Length: 491
Image (cartoon, rainbow, N blue to C red; front, side):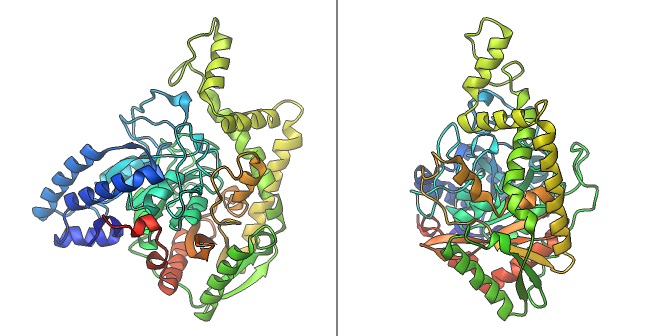
């Protein structure tokens, strides 16, 4: 067993029958990590010595026959905008230089209760604002399938770590596609849960009405297992749903026969590259051949989703990022003569270009005289997006789209054209606007690069889309068919 290639479910079984030791998995993973990290640059911080010590403790517990949680001993990476107590949270930004959170995020607490092994903090676009990880203040992560291309963003480091075999599973955050888009680009599973299903406490806020934490994995079973561990009500998060969480892994039931699928024509037109569209159609036809039905449907509001998002998200970012002022924590410019200049110079020097751009847009649309013309109108359009999804789910069990309009693009390809970068999330943004669950799974290759199929469900239909994704996994066998060259490498 090449342990760093194994799934969380496989490793959990091996730990319990003692055919594999946790220490062997951790050793194997770090040996592989040392080989591939210079090519991928997934991480900002790693915890190699700490993980080895924890592995030995866990092995002793398993040897004594103790009953441990299902995720005990599983190596998991965490996006560096999610707090781990006592470890720097940078959000890949200079403005958080020196900041060490004094508390865990709720998801971190829940994973630690499962006795996972946290391998480190992964790279991202600064404050989760971007679709390529090129906006990180530290370095650009690279795609394990082709290191001349981006891994997607903003959770590019988390996706690349799983795709390259540097973590078995990982956590990311998704505001407009930041889990699903890099999952598609890197050929792994990425899930955005229903808004409110997973606590946002300890997640550094970008846009509070849109942000949601979710898992990356190489199999649907692993995604269900992680979601089961991190979901549920949290009194620390005012937006957390009191609705009882489900046993996503133990209730997983592959579903295809009788499935009714709607495919929005607004996300299946000329904006989608022909090669991507062909792979998605092939996936839909595979489902159809096994008892599902699909047809194109009209959802007119989706045409306005990107425009709506880039009013609402920057407006919320403008408010949320006002706390980073050089006074309470993080970077402070030492050359200012007065308080006003200290604010201006600290924020000007600490934030990168994309974050500044979004703060300026958000401040503008919230300003006197423009609030109603932009922000209020955007919220009205958002209600139409919610309505169109609600109407569609009256007839269809799930909605499916390409996750992205193209495969992973070249490094620097969209550097001079922010609009082209924003349009990389054309199919994922509507889901966040409506607060729905969605999952991206690999469905084929175009130009030798992964293509993602997005499966969208109704609110709190997280179990439903996991079941459908598991059904597609059984039919397509994507975990074994789609592995990056770095994942296929040997030690």
